[in-house]
Length: 385
Image 1: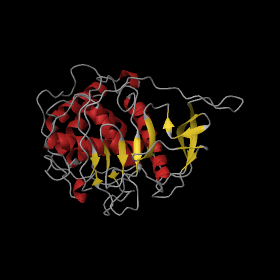
Image 2: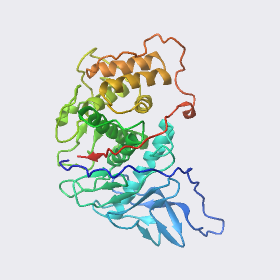
Image 3: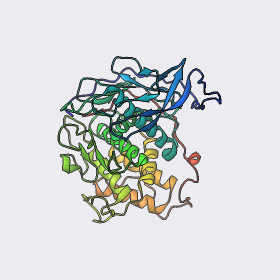
Image 4: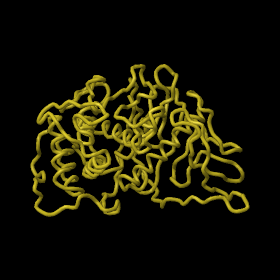
Protein backbone atom coordinates (compact mmCIF):
# COMPACT_ATOMS: atom_id res chain seq x y z
CA UNK A 1 0.00 0.00 0.00
CA UNK A 2 1.15 3.53 -0.54
CA UNK A 3 0.37 4.71 2.96
CA UNK A 4 3.09 5.07 5.55
CA UNK A 5 2.52 3.61 9.00
CA UNK A 6 1.98 6.11 11.79
CA UNK A 7 5.02 6.55 13.95
CA UNK A 8 5.14 4.11 16.81
CA UNK A 9 4.28 5.49 20.20
CA UNK A 10 6.81 5.82 22.96
CA UNK A 11 8.31 2.59 24.13
CA UNK A 12 5.87 0.85 26.42
CA UNK A 13 6.20 -1.70 29.15
CA UNK A 14 3.93 -4.69 29.46
CA UNK A 15 2.37 -6.12 32.59
CA UNK A 16 3.51 -9.68 33.00
CA UNK A 17 0.48 -11.94 33.41
CA UNK A 18 -0.16 -15.65 33.41
CA UNK A 19 -2.54 -16.94 30.80
CA UNK A 20 -6.05 -16.74 32.21
CA UNK A 21 -8.02 -19.96 32.35
CA UNK A 22 -11.35 -20.22 30.54
CA UNK A 23 -14.23 -21.70 32.51
CA UNK A 24 -17.36 -23.28 31.14
CA UNK A 25 -20.86 -22.31 32.26
CA UNK A 26 -22.05 -23.82 35.52
CA UNK A 27 -24.54 -26.64 35.63
CA UNK A 28 -27.34 -24.17 36.24
CA UNK A 29 -26.52 -22.37 33.00
CA UNK A 30 -25.72 -19.07 34.75
CA UNK A 31 -22.67 -17.12 33.65
CA UNK A 32 -20.29 -15.64 36.18
CA UNK A 33 -18.83 -12.15 35.85
CA UNK A 34 -15.97 -11.96 33.36
CA UNK A 35 -16.46 -15.54 32.25
CA UNK A 36 -14.70 -16.74 29.08
CA UNK A 37 -17.09 -18.17 26.51
CA UNK A 38 -17.05 -19.65 23.03
CA UNK A 39 -19.03 -17.22 20.90
CA UNK A 40 -20.31 -17.78 17.39
CA UNK A 41 -19.07 -15.47 14.65
CA UNK A 42 -20.17 -14.85 11.09
CA UNK A 43 -16.87 -14.04 9.42
CA UNK A 44 -16.04 -12.78 5.95
CA UNK A 45 -12.71 -14.56 5.40
CA UNK A 46 -12.85 -17.63 7.65
CA UNK A 47 -16.20 -19.30 6.99
CA UNK A 48 -19.45 -19.45 8.91
CA UNK A 49 -19.85 -19.97 11.68
CA UNK A 50 -16.48 -19.64 13.42
CA UNK A 51 -15.84 -20.05 17.12
CA UNK A 52 -14.18 -17.16 18.94
CA UNK A 53 -13.47 -16.70 22.62
CA UNK A 54 -15.53 -13.90 24.15
CA UNK A 55 -16.53 -12.67 27.60
CA UNK A 56 -19.78 -12.33 29.52
CA UNK A 57 -20.13 -9.96 32.46
CA UNK A 58 -23.41 -8.99 34.04
CA UNK A 59 -25.38 -10.52 31.19
CA UNK A 60 -23.51 -8.48 28.55
CA UNK A 61 -21.28 -10.21 26.00
CA UNK A 62 -18.14 -8.54 24.65
CA UNK A 63 -15.52 -9.16 22.00
CA UNK A 64 -12.84 -9.45 24.65
CA UNK A 65 -10.76 -12.59 25.21
CA UNK A 66 -9.73 -13.18 28.86
CA UNK A 67 -7.76 -16.30 27.91
CA UNK A 68 -5.39 -14.14 25.85
CA UNK A 69 -4.98 -11.08 28.08
CA UNK A 70 -5.17 -7.79 26.20
CA UNK A 71 -7.06 -9.03 23.14
CA UNK A 72 -10.32 -7.27 22.31
CA UNK A 73 -11.81 -5.58 19.27
CA UNK A 74 -13.99 -2.60 18.46
CA UNK A 75 -14.40 0.20 15.92
CA UNK A 76 -11.60 2.74 15.49
CA UNK A 77 -11.82 5.34 18.28
CA UNK A 78 -14.76 3.42 19.73
CA UNK A 79 -15.37 0.97 22.58
CA UNK A 80 -15.07 -2.81 22.43
CA UNK A 81 -18.11 -4.35 20.76
CA UNK A 82 -20.77 -5.54 23.23
CA UNK A 83 -24.27 -6.98 22.82
CA UNK A 84 -26.94 -9.06 24.52
CA UNK A 85 -26.22 -12.25 22.57
CA UNK A 86 -22.98 -14.13 21.89
CA UNK A 87 -23.43 -14.20 18.10
CA UNK A 88 -21.37 -11.70 16.14
CA UNK A 89 -21.17 -10.24 12.64
CA UNK A 90 -23.18 -10.81 9.46
CA UNK A 91 -20.39 -12.04 7.16
CA UNK A 92 -20.40 -9.03 4.82
CA UNK A 93 -17.22 -7.35 3.66
CA UNK A 94 -17.67 -3.88 5.14
CA UNK A 95 -19.50 -4.63 8.40
CA UNK A 96 -17.27 -3.58 11.30
CA UNK A 97 -18.50 -6.24 13.70
CA UNK A 98 -17.74 -8.85 11.05
CA UNK A 99 -14.24 -7.40 10.67
CA UNK A 100 -13.74 -7.86 14.41
CA UNK A 101 -14.88 -11.48 14.11
CA UNK A 102 -12.14 -12.05 11.53
CA UNK A 103 -9.57 -10.20 13.63
CA UNK A 104 -10.44 -12.09 16.83
CA UNK A 105 -10.38 -15.45 15.02
CA UNK A 106 -7.03 -14.74 13.36
CA UNK A 107 -5.41 -13.19 16.44
CA UNK A 108 -6.47 -16.15 18.57
CA UNK A 109 -5.06 -18.60 16.03
CA UNK A 110 -1.87 -16.53 15.73
CA UNK A 111 -1.45 -16.77 19.53
CA UNK A 112 -2.02 -20.54 19.37
CA UNK A 113 0.55 -20.90 16.56
CA UNK A 114 3.14 -19.03 18.61
CA UNK A 115 2.48 -21.38 21.55
CA UNK A 116 2.22 -24.67 19.69
CA UNK A 117 4.87 -24.23 17.00
CA UNK A 118 7.35 -21.81 18.57
CA UNK A 119 6.93 -22.23 22.34
CA UNK A 120 6.18 -18.54 22.86
CA UNK A 121 3.97 -17.30 25.69
CA UNK A 122 1.77 -14.70 24.07
CA UNK A 123 2.49 -12.01 21.52
CA UNK A 124 4.74 -10.03 23.84
CA UNK A 125 6.49 -13.19 25.09
CA UNK A 126 5.26 -12.67 28.66
CA UNK A 127 1.68 -13.86 28.39
CA UNK A 128 -0.09 -10.86 26.86
CA UNK A 129 -1.26 -9.49 23.54
CA UNK A 130 -2.83 -6.23 22.35
CA UNK A 131 -6.25 -4.85 21.37
CA UNK A 132 -7.45 -4.30 17.83
CA UNK A 133 -9.46 -1.58 16.08
CA UNK A 134 -11.21 -1.91 12.73
CA UNK A 135 -12.65 0.56 10.25
CA UNK A 136 -9.89 3.17 10.25
CA UNK A 137 -10.60 5.20 7.12
CA UNK A 138 -7.29 4.65 5.41
CA UNK A 139 -5.50 2.22 3.15
CA UNK A 140 -3.41 0.49 5.80
CA UNK A 141 -3.12 -2.11 8.55
CA UNK A 142 -0.54 -1.38 11.23
CA UNK A 143 0.69 -1.60 14.81
CA UNK A 144 1.02 1.83 16.44
CA UNK A 145 2.71 0.80 19.67
CA UNK A 146 -0.61 0.45 21.51
CA UNK A 147 -3.01 -1.49 19.29
CA UNK A 148 -3.36 -3.31 15.98
CA UNK A 149 -5.40 -1.20 13.55
CA UNK A 150 -7.06 -2.34 10.34
CA UNK A 151 -8.37 -0.23 7.46
CA UNK A 152 -9.61 -0.98 3.94
CA UNK A 153 -8.23 -1.90 0.55
CA UNK A 154 -7.84 0.88 -2.00
CA UNK A 155 -11.20 0.10 -3.62
CA UNK A 156 -12.91 0.24 -0.21
CA UNK A 157 -14.55 -3.11 -0.96
CA UNK A 158 -12.74 -5.23 1.65
CA UNK A 159 -11.42 -4.67 5.13
CA UNK A 160 -7.80 -5.72 5.68
CA UNK A 161 -8.65 -8.47 8.14
CA UNK A 162 -7.71 -11.71 6.37
CA UNK A 163 -5.66 -14.34 8.22
CA UNK A 164 -2.35 -13.36 6.68
CA UNK A 165 -2.83 -9.61 7.20
CA UNK A 166 -3.86 -10.02 10.85
CA UNK A 167 -0.92 -12.40 11.33
CA UNK A 168 1.30 -9.84 9.59
CA UNK A 169 0.32 -7.04 11.98
CA UNK A 170 0.52 -9.11 15.16
CA UNK A 171 3.70 -10.70 13.81
CA UNK A 172 5.22 -7.24 13.64
CA UNK A 173 4.66 -6.95 17.38
CA UNK A 174 6.36 -10.30 17.93
CA UNK A 175 9.32 -9.05 15.90
CA UNK A 176 9.60 -5.87 17.98
CA UNK A 177 9.46 -7.76 21.25
CA UNK A 178 11.98 -10.45 20.35
CA UNK A 179 15.67 -9.87 20.88
CA UNK A 180 16.46 -6.17 21.06
CA UNK A 181 15.97 -3.22 18.72
CA UNK A 182 17.35 -4.11 15.29
CA UNK A 183 18.07 -0.53 14.27
CA UNK A 184 16.96 1.50 11.27
CA UNK A 185 18.11 1.49 7.69
CA UNK A 186 17.63 -0.60 4.59
CA UNK A 187 18.55 -4.05 5.89
CA UNK A 188 16.89 -3.92 9.35
CA UNK A 189 13.70 -2.58 7.77
CA UNK A 190 13.77 -5.26 5.06
CA UNK A 191 14.20 -7.99 7.67
CA UNK A 192 11.42 -6.48 9.79
CA UNK A 193 9.02 -6.37 6.87
CA UNK A 194 9.84 -9.94 5.89
CA UNK A 195 9.38 -11.18 9.46
CA UNK A 196 5.87 -9.71 9.49
CA UNK A 197 5.08 -11.54 6.24
CA UNK A 198 6.53 -14.79 7.54
CA UNK A 199 4.35 -14.61 10.68
CA UNK A 200 1.32 -13.94 8.49
CA UNK A 201 2.14 -17.01 6.41
CA UNK A 202 2.66 -19.13 9.52
CA UNK A 203 -0.79 -18.11 10.77
CA UNK A 204 -2.38 -19.29 7.50
CA UNK A 205 -0.54 -22.61 7.63
CA UNK A 206 -1.42 -23.20 11.27
CA UNK A 207 -5.14 -22.68 10.58
CA UNK A 208 -4.96 -24.75 7.36
CA UNK A 209 -8.23 -23.57 5.80
CA UNK A 210 -9.58 -25.32 2.68
CA UNK A 211 -9.16 -23.71 -0.75
CA UNK A 212 -12.53 -21.96 -0.58
CA UNK A 213 -11.28 -19.78 2.30
CA UNK A 214 -7.92 -18.16 3.18
CA UNK A 215 -5.95 -21.33 2.46
CA UNK A 216 -2.30 -21.84 3.44
CA UNK A 217 0.00 -20.44 0.76
CA UNK A 218 2.96 -18.14 0.42
CA UNK A 219 1.03 -15.16 -0.89
CA UNK A 220 0.39 -12.02 1.15
CA UNK A 221 -2.86 -10.08 0.85
CA UNK A 222 -4.47 -12.09 -1.94
CA UNK A 223 -7.85 -12.38 -0.18
CA UNK A 224 -8.18 -8.65 0.49
CA UNK A 225 -6.87 -7.54 -2.94
CA UNK A 226 -4.96 -4.79 -1.18
CA UNK A 227 -4.25 -2.41 -4.05
CA UNK A 228 -6.31 -3.98 -6.83
CA UNK A 229 -3.45 -6.12 -8.14
CA UNK A 230 -3.97 -9.30 -6.14
CA UNK A 231 -1.20 -10.45 -3.75
CA UNK A 232 1.31 -7.87 -2.61
CA UNK A 233 4.00 -10.55 -2.20
CA UNK A 234 4.77 -13.94 -3.73
CA UNK A 235 7.27 -15.35 -1.27
CA UNK A 236 8.41 -18.09 -3.66
CA UNK A 237 9.24 -15.51 -6.34
CA UNK A 238 9.07 -11.92 -5.03
CA UNK A 239 9.89 -10.53 -8.49
CA UNK A 240 6.32 -11.38 -9.54
CA UNK A 241 5.19 -8.36 -7.52
CA UNK A 242 8.21 -6.17 -8.28
CA UNK A 243 10.15 -7.14 -5.16
CA UNK A 244 13.73 -8.37 -4.87
CA UNK A 245 14.41 -12.11 -5.05
CA UNK A 246 18.04 -11.73 -4.08
CA UNK A 247 20.27 -9.92 -1.61
CA UNK A 248 20.69 -7.02 -1.23
CA UNK A 249 17.19 -5.55 -0.78
CA UNK A 250 16.42 -2.52 -2.87
CA UNK A 251 15.52 0.89 -1.48
CA UNK A 252 12.01 2.16 -2.08
CA UNK A 253 8.96 3.78 -0.54
CA UNK A 254 8.14 0.51 1.23
CA UNK A 255 10.70 -1.76 2.85
CA UNK A 256 11.27 -4.75 0.58
CA UNK A 257 11.22 -8.02 2.51
CA UNK A 258 11.58 -10.05 -0.68
CA UNK A 259 15.05 -11.55 -0.12
CA UNK A 260 14.32 -13.04 3.31
CA UNK A 261 10.82 -14.10 2.21
CA UNK A 262 12.46 -15.99 -0.65
CA UNK A 263 14.99 -17.55 1.76
CA UNK A 264 12.18 -18.75 4.01
CA UNK A 265 10.30 -20.39 1.14
CA UNK A 266 13.43 -22.14 -0.10
CA UNK A 267 14.21 -23.39 3.41
CA UNK A 268 10.65 -24.61 4.05
CA UNK A 269 9.69 -25.91 0.62
CA UNK A 270 12.74 -26.01 -1.66
CA UNK A 271 12.93 -25.15 -5.34
CA UNK A 272 10.39 -27.62 -6.78
CA UNK A 273 8.02 -28.76 -4.04
CA UNK A 274 5.25 -31.16 -5.12
CA UNK A 275 1.95 -29.35 -5.56
CA UNK A 276 3.43 -25.95 -4.77
CA UNK A 277 5.03 -23.20 -6.86
CA UNK A 278 8.58 -23.64 -8.09
CA UNK A 279 11.09 -21.14 -6.75
CA UNK A 280 14.17 -19.83 -8.59
CA UNK A 281 17.61 -19.42 -7.07
CA UNK A 282 20.00 -16.49 -7.42
CA UNK A 283 23.20 -18.46 -6.77
CA UNK A 284 24.49 -21.88 -5.76
CA UNK A 285 22.91 -25.23 -6.60
CA UNK A 286 19.83 -25.07 -8.82
CA UNK A 287 17.87 -27.59 -6.74
CA UNK A 288 17.11 -27.36 -3.02
CA UNK A 289 14.94 -29.61 -0.85
CA UNK A 290 12.85 -27.98 1.86
CA UNK A 291 12.75 -29.09 5.50
CA UNK A 292 9.07 -28.25 6.15
CA UNK A 293 7.43 -25.08 7.36
CA UNK A 294 7.44 -25.90 11.07
CA UNK A 295 11.17 -26.61 11.19
CA UNK A 296 11.84 -23.51 9.09
CA UNK A 297 9.65 -21.47 11.44
CA UNK A 298 11.53 -22.61 14.54
CA UNK A 299 14.90 -21.89 12.94
CA UNK A 300 13.72 -18.44 11.83
CA UNK A 301 12.22 -17.66 15.24
CA UNK A 302 15.25 -18.84 17.22
CA UNK A 303 17.44 -16.74 14.94
CA UNK A 304 15.37 -13.70 15.95
CA UNK A 305 16.43 -14.18 19.56
CA UNK A 306 19.84 -12.79 18.51
CA UNK A 307 18.36 -9.67 16.91
CA UNK A 308 20.20 -6.53 18.02
CA UNK A 309 21.14 -3.10 16.75
CA UNK A 310 22.63 -3.26 13.30
CA UNK A 311 20.57 -6.30 12.37
CA UNK A 312 21.56 -7.38 8.89
CA UNK A 313 21.20 -10.24 6.43
CA UNK A 314 24.68 -11.45 7.34
CA UNK A 315 23.77 -11.53 11.05
CA UNK A 316 20.45 -13.21 10.30
CA UNK A 317 22.27 -15.90 8.33
CA UNK A 318 24.68 -16.60 11.19
CA UNK A 319 21.89 -16.55 13.78
CA UNK A 320 19.69 -19.00 11.88
CA UNK A 321 22.54 -21.39 11.08
CA UNK A 322 23.39 -21.48 14.79
CA UNK A 323 19.69 -21.99 15.55
CA UNK A 324 19.52 -24.92 13.11
CA UNK A 325 22.50 -26.49 14.82
CA UNK A 326 21.02 -26.00 18.31
CA UNK A 327 17.57 -27.27 17.35
CA UNK A 328 18.33 -30.04 14.87
CA UNK A 329 21.36 -31.40 13.06
CA UNK A 330 23.47 -31.33 9.94
CA UNK A 331 20.66 -31.77 7.43
CA UNK A 332 18.91 -28.67 8.74
CA UNK A 333 22.16 -26.72 9.14
CA UNK A 334 23.10 -27.41 5.54
CA UNK A 335 19.60 -26.59 4.29
CA UNK A 336 19.66 -23.26 6.15
CA UNK A 337 23.03 -22.39 4.65
CA UNK A 338 21.96 -23.44 1.17
CA UNK A 339 18.83 -21.29 1.27
CA UNK A 340 20.86 -18.22 2.28
CA UNK A 341 23.44 -18.92 -0.42
CA UNK A 342 20.59 -19.26 -2.92
CA UNK A 343 19.61 -15.61 -2.31
CA UNK A 344 23.28 -14.48 -2.36
CA UNK A 345 23.93 -14.01 1.35
CA UNK A 346 27.50 -15.23 1.78
CA UNK A 347 28.76 -17.61 4.48
CA UNK A 348 29.70 -15.91 7.74
CA UNK A 349 32.65 -16.32 10.09
CA UNK A 350 31.74 -18.55 13.00
CA UNK A 351 29.06 -20.63 11.28
CA UNK A 352 28.83 -24.21 12.55
CA UNK A 353 30.25 -26.75 10.14
CA UNK A 354 29.20 -30.33 9.55
CA UNK A 355 29.76 -32.90 10.83
CA UNK A 356 28.98 -31.05 14.07
CA UNK A 357 31.61 -31.26 16.78
CA UNK A 358 29.09 -32.49 19.35
CA UNK A 359 26.05 -34.73 18.90
CA UNK A 360 22.75 -32.91 18.43
CA UNK A 361 19.23 -34.25 18.70
CA UNK A 362 16.98 -34.48 15.68
CA UNK A 363 14.93 -31.70 17.25
CA UNK A 364 13.56 -30.65 20.61
CA UNK A 365 11.55 -33.44 22.23
CA UNK A 366 9.18 -30.80 23.50
CA UNK A 367 8.68 -27.09 23.07
CA UNK A 368 9.87 -26.61 26.65
CA UNK A 369 13.38 -27.44 25.47
CA UNK A 370 13.49 -24.37 23.26
CA UNK A 371 15.27 -21.53 25.06
CA UNK A 372 13.94 -18.05 24.40
CA UNK A 373 15.70 -14.87 25.44
CA UNK A 374 13.33 -12.52 27.34
CA UNK A 375 11.95 -9.92 24.94
CA UNK A 376 12.85 -6.27 24.76
CA UNK A 377 10.73 -3.57 23.19
CA UNK A 378 11.63 -1.26 20.34
CA UNK A 379 9.86 1.67 18.81
CA UNK A 380 9.73 0.19 15.29
CA UNK A 381 6.19 -0.12 13.94
CA UNK A 382 4.97 -2.47 11.22
CA UNK A 383 2.56 -1.61 8.45
CA UNK A 384 1.01 -3.23 5.43
CA UNK A 385 1.95 -0.89 2.59
